Image (cartoon, rainbow, N blue to C red; front, side, top):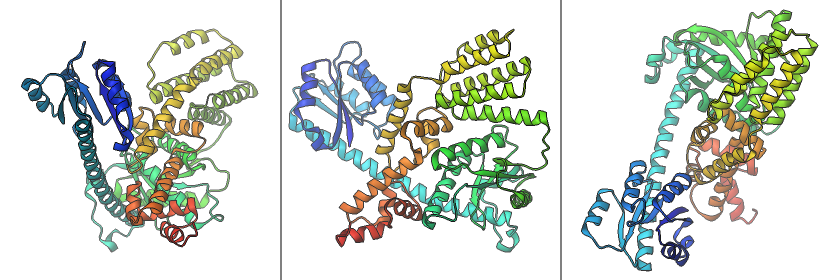
Length: 523
């Protein structure tokens, strides 16, 4: 379904066009109106209509200027423009053609002529959509082949089978051969002994795809599976843009939001280049064999604990937990209160409490700016001045007030982001959707978006995407004869096995079986 914008400074004309035609019959879902070019630009920015019908002669800004601005931002494939004017002038028509306008209609416009012109634009948009879907499908298929080849190479590398299998370095890794790297083994906290095997396979595939969106897409490392099916991350530890530990903690938090389990990570030693990556893998495997229940989230070797280090580690966990829950104000304040209790229990000095309170407040403030795009102000400087000379309890209280004001944002803003995200997901199920890509779409960090989505929707974003895709695939299986493999592509799955696992998890049967049951009247 498409969106249409009608722009005319005469209310009778724009409302007459809006109310005089059965737009839904043409495939138009929403019809917007604007009384000026400036108002039209605001509607275009917010609603992104695919078809614009505009008058030329308007006050403040002409329709021609509006068309110039539209064409400076949107191509013909993204937005179709029809011109409506009372002036049958060749110069107008010439300028419209130069700006790649789809049609030039004279007032008073004939309804049949207008409807026919709108149909032409919708047909053109449908052709463009189908062509783009095919291009994306081809790209995804090619990407899947390259990913499979990359995984075979990485497995042979860490299991030291290079000479036996004779695998050459992939072109993408030629420049990466000498970088410092570390192997990380992800251990999902899944009850592997319970539930259906297909459900466990689906969860592991989901987990792997999230890793690829966060690690591979950022060029921070390579995600693959070893011979035993464990998810392995080969991380570039020499890249100053990504701190390995922080990256793994961010990944663990996103997986916890999206999959309802927090993986533990075993990190191998740092190795020089891909040729020696098997050393890091073997180190990680050794640590994994020594790992015991209840060990820390990220397992490292050679770390002794004394009292000061223990206190520092506890503080660090408080800070990370507070920042990880920044989208949930109540949760943040609950964790902060626990932190206050800990400072009293360990009888920390005033100076230490001031330092850590300011560090926590700065971390929340910085994270808030980075994740939400909020403008920088002087709040943190004011807090620093207020803490100077304050005793321990005053420091804790002033920091509490600062955090409370910062994290309790307007719920309306948060809901608007998620409402827009849901609408985008519903309208682009065939696209390559992920937490990372959606977060980029709405100018927030993946971590913040994932936490916010779960807080508002009470389910992970990835689960919502899967649920919507399965709903659409069920409708297609029920109402068409399209093959299951083609339906998988239409709802965003280029991996038919992944589609089948997702469908079976939500319906209890495979797509093919589901259609057979319907045909036999068992659905």
